Amino acid sequence: MNIKPFLLTLSFAFIASVSVAQVNILGAKTPDQIGVKSAEQIALDNDSPLAYGYVGDRDILFSKMVWEKIILDERVNFPLYYPIDTNNIGSDRRSLYDVLTKSIVEGKLENVYDDSYFTGRRSLKDLADITTKIDTLDIGYDQFNAEGVVDQEYISTRTIGAYDVSAYLIKGLWYFDKRQGELKYRLIGIAPAAADVNFIDSEDESNKEPNPLYWIFYPEAREILHEAKSFNSKNSAMPFSFDHILNSRRFNAVIYKEENVYGDRKVDEYVAENALMQLLESERIKEKVRDFELDMWSY
Figure 1 (cartoon, rainbow, N blue to C red):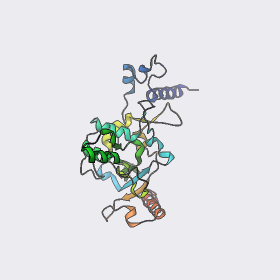
Figure 2 (cartoon, rainbow, N blue to C red):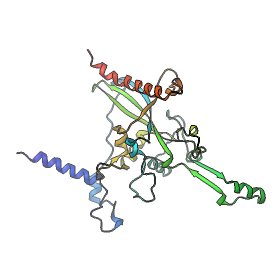
Figure 3 (tube, rainbow, N blue to C red):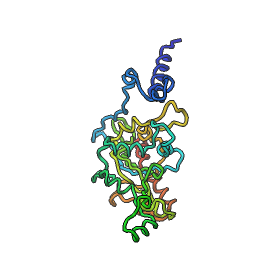
Figure 4 (cartoon, rainbow, N blue to C red):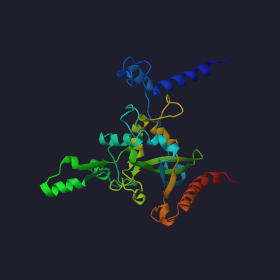
């Protein structure tokens, strides 16, 4: 029996598991050593996102741009949502929203846009304005009327956090690569969505429709999302990177818009006030795209 292929496979599996598990957790002598890679580990990892293959314009026989909503209430989408409380958990585990927002604040993600067409940019001040609400309590108004000043304790500040993000909006292109003869998907943009900060604590559910906080051109964020890992409930030694989850479509999403002659109008604009029919329309759009590949091989 030739065991050489088996040993090679086992060796690669061991190396992969070492590179993605929590670093140095079994070899650490103090808690400070957990998560610290040695020079040999850094040289061995040499890890980077899987590069996209080149696709020329002439290689695309068919394409359709679609916008989808990833609803975070669904269990399959939990890896993108949790953890929402980072006070009692390690620094190596963060939600997708925390990873994106921290990268923007630290300047790692320089380009942040206000729409899915990436036409206008948003600054840190713009993000602070739409994610923070500063309000004065009633007792603060009474103090201001009496004394002309308001103590800081009577001013409340509400900031949108990972807990408040209820969905992600993604923009992607389905295209048929005629060189390889298959239908493929390329993620173009992603946006965390939450209710308006002014109504986020309201009991009126009609004011809690998730709106995109900002849009990010996805290829610019791949390196960051590759380094950030999400929790794998089946094997904590092999966490998935956010880049892997999104590119391999390990989530459930609903199409809410496709490019069309009516100015890319949304599904709920022409199928109004009927959630079931909107869902069926979303499925119709998805099947229309998928059927193109099947029809290519029908004779």
